[in-house]
Image 1: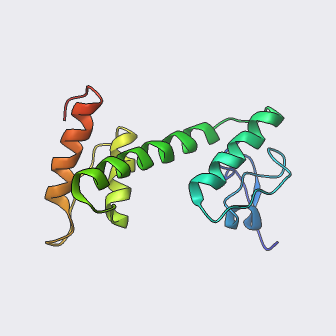
Image 2: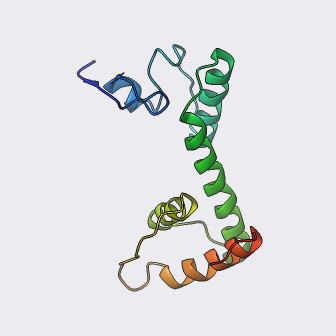
Length: 130
């Protein structure tokens, strides 16, 4: 361990070691056990279940919900276009799902127009206005 970060645990917002952050885990107070998975969503799902069993789940539920909505949106995008999101598009989806207002400034060919059209469909599917 090289560093302890105050207020950086993604679950309880208490102190956490650099090793736990590197492993994408909450602090040891929230969850002692380490969960292993090569698939990120499976990892956060496993950690979520561990936190539930220990009854220490706090902000992790928000992280889980955000990733679940991203996967749902990406599946719909793949069905509509035949492609998965680019990294930038994943960031844009996360911002919109959180209800953040932002502008997209990116070079030609980055998928801004396709993304905008897709999100209109996504919002319509969920009964929201775009």
